[in-house]
Length: 171
Figure: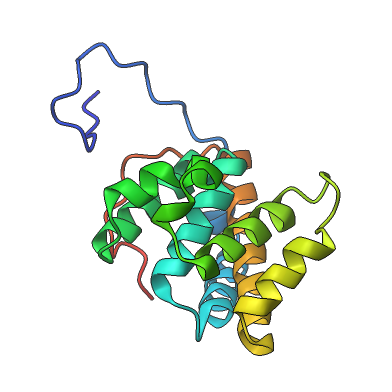
């Protein structure tokens, strides 16, 4: 089996790739197309780099390997620095890598993604509302909701990371 990985210097004794369970997008093309439209509608008016940071952070929390692969690559292709992507999982300890607006968005992303952990605290919402005007804040909430939906398809379907190239899914 020849699998092309992004890391050509990787040792030959890598663990085998997990087989995909199910592809909801292939079985339900109307759902997939609706999700793509929802994704496009959600991020209108938002800074594309901010959207990638939000998508990466939610995907880290949800452990969606497929989405982590995709959005890290998309962020790099959009000019994001490797350093800021690497630091995302510890952003509270790396605040100086991000703007106050990005920090507010990351806090909101975590609260919306992990709803079982005390809901969305008033202070997290208020901080986001300070940095985003109302329509932009609604867009951010929509973008966070959409990546969480994608993550659930990816994790449940066990979609394999490592095969995505930026531009693959541009509609």
